Each structure stands twice: as structure tokens, then as C-alpha cells.
Amino acid sequence: MKVLIVDDHELVRDGLARIIAEEFTITKLLEASNGNEGEKAARKGNWDIIIMDMSMPDKTGLEVLKELRSESIKTPVLILSIHPENQYALRVWKAGGNGYLTKDCPRAEFVNAVRIILSGKKFISASVAEKLAMRFDDDMTKERHELISDRELEVLKLIASGKTVSEIAVELSLSVPTVSTYRSRLLEKMNMKNNAELTLYAINNKLV
Image 1 (cartoon, helix red, strand yellow):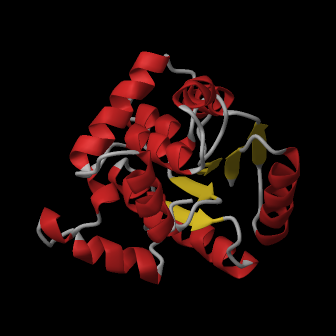
Image 2: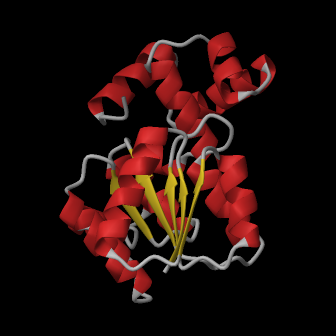
């Protein structure tokens, strides 16, 4: 079994590597400390599975996943995240991911997810399965944050956390005008008037 672990926290990488070594027979294991390194390693290696963090400073796991799939790299990808499933699981699936787990999940669930993905199937938790079923409904039945882009969701969460446009620009490596444009799109798409309404929505929907 050849495994690539991508996470910007050394302790997390060590913990995942230890669990995998105890549960599976490993022939090769490589660690990458950021999205760019992970993307390069994914292109070079013939991996059985890539286990990747969602939130990394240079490039998110979702961005790396989309790039790999655009290059027809079909290596199974399990995304781990601190964010609840209702925020990103469906986006990961839509991008071609093979599973999504929160980092506070039980060890047994993580191991089970890896086994399922290695068997050629996709791992779906009960809550994600319910969300996927709802995709068959009309857009009007969906939560408003499910209708915005991935980058708009990032901006929404940062606005709700109290950050200014300038601070968001620095954190996401974007220009201030670009962030302002994302904010304007958010207000329009979500039919809201100001940051206070965006923040209240994010809190009520547990996005922050």
C-alpha cells in the first residue's frame, strides 16, 4: 500500500502515519507539508490513496483535488478537515473526492473510510448521504451557502469571523478589490444587505 499524507501540521501527519502503519501493510509512505508539495507528489507517485487536509495556507485540499482531477489523475483522495460536513463534504464529492471526514472522528471510522476507499468504493457517512439525497430537490430547497462558490464560502466565513476586507485579502493572497467583489457577489446571491446579515447567517448555520 502506497500512501501520500498532505497536512501542514507535523503532529497530524505523524498521527495519521502511525495509525496507517498499525492498520495496514505499507510499502511506501510520503508526507507533504502543504498543498503545493502534495500536488507535486501526487503527480509523481503511483499512490493507492492520498489523505489530505482541507485547510492549508498555500492551497486548500479542495483546490489540489480539483487540479488533480482536471489533469485526469484519478488517485483516490480522502479529505480530512476541522470543518463540519455540512460546509464542505458535498463540495469535495462534486470535485471528485472519494471521502470526507472531520478530524475529530473516531479512529475506527477513519480506518473504515480508508478500507472502503482502497476497495474501490467511496466513503459516505450517514449525514453526507442525507445531503446527497437532498441534491435531487430543487435549488430553492437548498441552504443559501450551498449555492455560492468555494471561494465565496471562504470569504463568507472570514467576514463572519470579524476580519476586514484587507485582512481577508492577506489571508487568501488576493487583492482588496477582488475580495470586495466576492463580498458583493455574496450579498447579491444570498439576498443580504451588509456584513451583519452575513455574519448572522453564518452563525445560525454553524459556518463559524
